[in-house]
Length: 292
Length: 322
Image 1 (cartoon, one colour):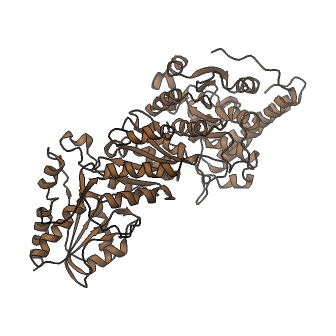
Image 2: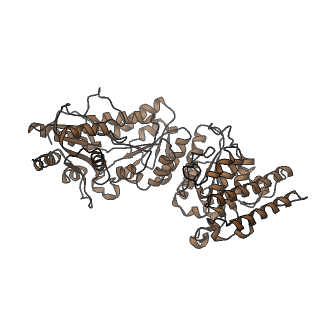
Image 3: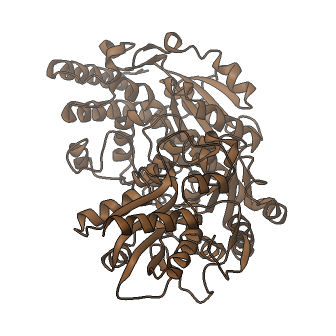
């Protein structure tokens, strides 16, 4: 259960993924700014994980989406839908134009994921549901002898839902090593630090005791994420649990670790400042040995 | 009880279990998902025969329904079997979001429904399930009256394209129907001879169709004609059958093993008023109070959900209208 070492993945591939992370941040911030609604902090904390999953780990494409024999993704922390919309638009599931309709009258692009949007597999929004549905999907794949894997990202505030622990019990009971549950451990929820609202640590000990193979990762570090997911399944016969240590609001200095950015919408000035930070980061990437 | 020449069948629960075995023999995609309820649900023989087609979740109803939704989304024909009281209360959010809203055609099977658990008390009664599920869109609601209706609805559920909730009890039921009767989800079945005019329409659902039917026989002996409907589907709601029964009758009585609030009676009253069909109406069910202690039969008798109680309600309602 140690932090994984960096993997010598092709430098160009890593650079490409970092560019995507900046692109997704721009897309989701524009979406939230235009819609005048959204979950800014939580989208920014989980967007690098989504980036690596969709661009490096999972085989989910618009072309194979309607067949069952592929990987699956459930966005259990449904309120951070803007990050998912940003990734799915880039993957070609729908046109960028449709993002202009986010949270607008009669739009399919509501403030939580729904199957009305091509590319989204399960409706979420109420917390503590995604893991159970993922268990059902992973169990179906096992029973049918398919090699599909089922990924889900949960919020850390979400972990106080009792159904998470019901689902965890059944994931281990059915030895679902094709299930990958990822906790976006940004340590903040709507009313304060997670450990002040309701202390849930030690999470590693709890999930291990429930039968998961637990791994830690810096959930905003592309190299660490790509290296970790190459080791799936972490242990044969055990469901996988990733404690992805992230920063809420990651990538925009004045949003990082600020509780009000849970669902605050940037003003015109803040939006401009955020964009210029992202453009600065983009420039740095293109420098020799560039870092995000 | 009225005089009756009805033959005695078995429990709707046993009918459900044997029908499932028949269906699973033909279709390996049929899955039963249980919450330590395989004994209560009479699916132990199913589990023994098809160990690869049963999923045990343990006593965890929220996870039970969430997992069922996931299995259904992967193409499984999922029957999730658990006592109606826990299934439709503890796991209501999963039924609402993961099944109905997500459009996964799970077959949600509420066993030992209504006051089947009798003196075990309110924790084990489901007198709220019609009400809460009627307020959630995209889930059909069926309560079969006898073995025939149970077998038919389970067969129909296999290919039903939408989520469906089916609830029944665990007592031995008389056979109400001839086997050549046509069953269709959303189409009421009339048990009495069709006439141009009736004195009373008796519209019942689930296992209260039997006392309604027997009440109709008592009334007939007194020269009072009745139109007895088994309205097994609360959704889709058979407006035409209810409209015709009410239009042709002087008074309307509904009967259900459910709270008088939000169930069949409320649905019928709401429909008739909005269709401008104004008839004196009485809702027979469990009143808005702490339910009395007793067996299912004692509770039924106490609240007039019996042949005598329903026929007396009919006399009173007809008398008031004079």
